[in-house]
Length: 132
Image (cartoon, rainbow, N blue to C red; front, side, top):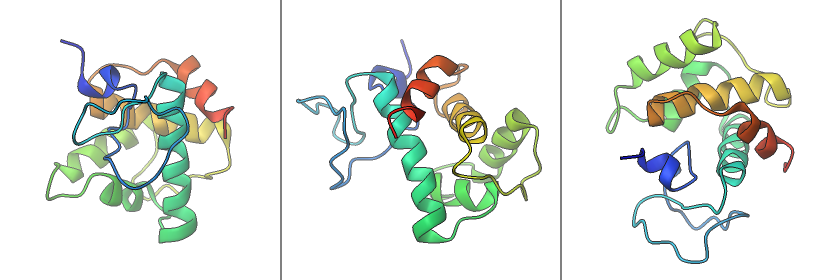
């Protein structure tokens, strides 16, 4: 069966909150995670969330972002950080530029890989970036 994040077009598995994201399916049938109409909307939400982690919550390093994205109460956060850094070929102390397309698309791809267990489709991620 296809991973939940892909079925929901929510490759980052963003939990349902009060946020009213663009591109949400009219009917939300998953009780825990947002469902988007197309992958590009899910990637847009993922990238904007990461940008907000920087702007509103002071995240700087990859480790800062992943500690917030995937808290240890629910995840193997250390393993998650290692996987993202390996995919991006950077140390966990790396400070991504949240306004750089290539950096953020690579970051989103690495998160999607961990969340779904399959490589991301870069065209979907870039389409999401282009909606920001």
